[in-house]
Length: 470
Ligand SMILES: [Zn+2]
Image 1 (tube, helix red, strand yellow):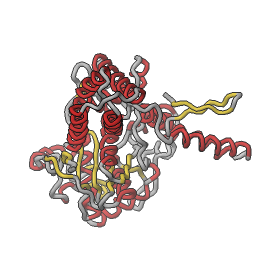
Image 2: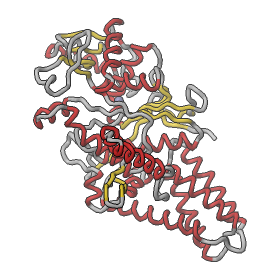
Image 3: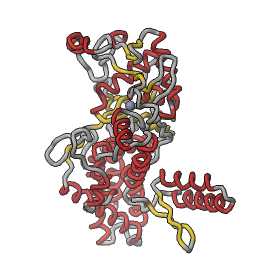
Image 4: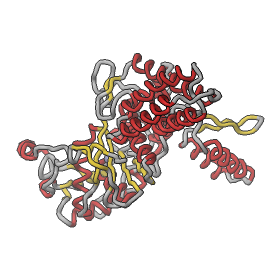
């Protein structure tokens, strides 16, 4: 079976082949933790989860890196108003992000590098870019010189002539050579030290721009060429173009072989949802309105293909919830019912067809909605067959396999993550031991670690209990 993924770079569905057989390295742009993630961000994050899960189903050993942007202008602004450091300011939003991901059943990434913890890697890359003339210092800021990178715009298939002409007109308002040149490093402002947002560098004290963090951190964890880079379509220009320019100018190697972009989530009126636009919906809002996060997961992943726009509405969430209920009931019934006296050959053949069709749909650029459509058709037939005792031992086994097939992506049937309970119990025992040994630092660290997994601890008289944080 061949996996095809739509590659923005080639504007075609390309056969996926990693650099190293059996392994896939994927970098995805994570949240800027200045606030709660809105449903549009969550859609992109769940698409990463779908890509990753299907790579695993396809037999790849996946290394998934998702960055946390814990420094940017909005964070600085908010921290200044709150009178705290940026580290203190982002803390609750980082925790909330992991809670959301846990509640939505996204598999944890292999690494979640934070921008502020990788400044040396960024400084090193910027130094390299200055040395090879791809970047320049202007009044303490460092800019990438777009004119030095002739293929700039190739990802978004941008007309570079237009970009240049427009650039000349406005360029004199800035210290940079061209208005489209983008910042790699921003000179420290008087407040930045107090906010914990300034670092020393050979080109002057300051802080990194947003784009450079992805280039530096992806290299640190995945090397110079990524098998897959994914992100929301709104990041394609300029963020992803800038990542390509920085990485390729510094490393002299192709940055990413596959670029995957997920479409917007629109609100009920059809407007693109974004934090900057004001009104946005978080998972908390949806939970408060009574929507089960698992239904939200199903809605975001399975009600439309990831490259088509999706509109958030109460009706659509109710419909998703109903579909989750039907699939769970179906799975329950298959698991619990005793095999009937006969196995209907036609039905066995149909189950085989649907399993193959489901896999084909996923292999065709992750068409989960199409695959799930096949499952629903079959569930109707199988329910009727169970009513009349036409599903025997073999039919039941085949249906159980089909349930495993779709739940490998949807992850709505199981009630707990396999292995999670043991892992949590182990960490709780370690925390108890640490507390008895008065190693409260370690105990707190474990509580934090569990919180990152979306697990909350409750100390009670009968010992420690744990629950999903949402
Ligand atoms: Zn990025």
